[in-house]
Image 1 (cartoon, rainbow, N blue to C red):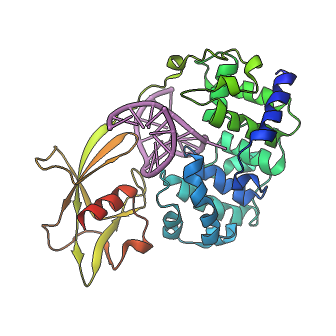
Image 2 (image 1 turned 90 degrees about the vertical axis):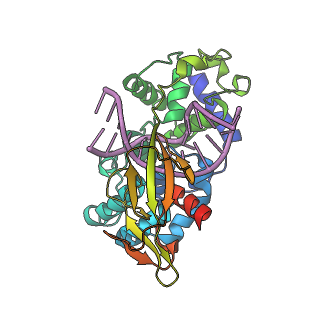
Length: 316
DNA sequence: TAACCGTGGCT
DNA sequence: TAGCCAAGGTT
């Protein structure tokens, strides 16, 4: 690692870092929640949700003692709902195994649900100043470009990331600076090499070949779902809870049946997920709900998937 | 190991 | 505009 590169990056970060609420604290609970929210999720999406979380659950203890439904409700709309369940489970683990205090050992942080090496590295460096690297999408892209190795696998990238952070004085700022560079200047589609503080130390400067960085495309499968709507003025709407695994696990929806074939009618709504395109066909022809579920006077207290919200807005 | 898991911003 | 993809982890 070039020391000049290190200095240049840190000077740039000192001047250009975005002011983000989770950068104003070293409190592990706050950092932890921010890191989970930010997994595969853009800063702009997290910003309006971050502070509200702590109004709902001011402490880890409050989170641990909340119901699973309340936690999912607080996560509603953020996607990847397993993350909310992991947070809940981890909060309970912190209560029982660590006396309610977020663990300060890297290995213990890694044991918590939903926290892998990169997230643990971030939390540990931000809260406890350990020299533990982060290797998120930003850092991977920056490192691959610095060394002009677009095909490099995670194993080598982890070595490079760890080697890099060990030359820094402040591991927390180093990790933040690497992510900030990737998120702003060294962006995926159109890197701004002319604005890059480390352009003189980058093997790909001004000739980044985006075509070599393309990921393998995800296959999007079309599925057709009948959405059984039971709505009545006295009882409200009938909702049932999704199973523990799969799409929208644990969330509440009207009963859904998967159709074998694409029906003749047009879907009332199409909801696009990463690997699925959900074609939704509302049906109000049946009179009495059957199976598991409950009448709810209002959907307000329940965590519903965004696609179902959209459908209900259209139909009702 | 590779498939799976959401949503919204960006170009 | 429609596709790409973002502060990944789990199984």
